[in-house]
Length: 305
View 1 (spheres, rainbow, N blue to C red):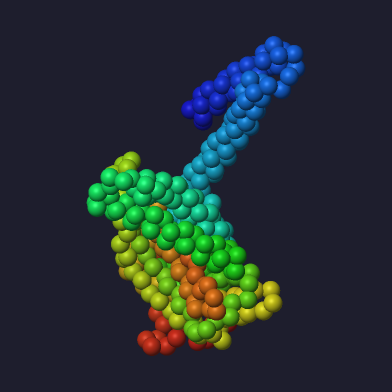
View 2 (view 1 turned 180 degrees about the vertical axis):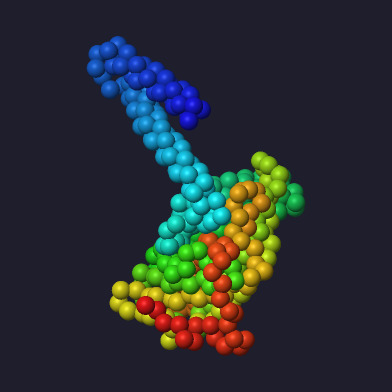
């Protein structure tokens, strides 16, 4: 927390300096709201708010870290109880934030590529190789279309959430729950759920950083339309997977080399298709179960409570 206090002190000093500058300008210009008063005043007030927000955020991070360390000591052989997020059976999809991120990237990309293409068009002495710059606006159009599509999907289905009945998913056992959608999903065909275990590795740093993923295990289940429960209030999609005993557990101790589990749900519907995914915790809990019979639909006898 010491480093956070030092940084907050620097922010506070700059904010006070800006406010004093605004106050000096206010007296010098006889109380007139000139730019020399408004600019440092607004910047000082904004930096003051930022300093207070940063201090609150830093204290919350330290508190959560202390609580996690306490849980590590209490449940040393149960790593799924260490993370606060893993204790909540409700996992929210990030459809809305994903749409916002795509819009930010689309605006940034097009803001750079469009002027470059405009310069090439109006350059009377351009060479043929210069036309390669038009690839970038084309990519920008595709990214913009992706942002629009993601936004329409978000508006249509909202942010689905996964409510786990098994917390966590058990290696050698089952991962089960219900996906809740705040909209009526009208299926055109059976839906597809995919549970996958992925090793995610980050190499390099800065602009040379790259991320690679390797699927360690993957299984798909096709969910018949009559297993979905739709009403005026929304749609509930049953989830049930058997996880073999030789699978790798969730491991986020090293953020540059971690094992993550994802549940992906897809379904063809009129207009924009339904698609979402959730990160799910999977560990060897010791609660094992016999595997399902080969060829028998896993959800054949499943009922949503």
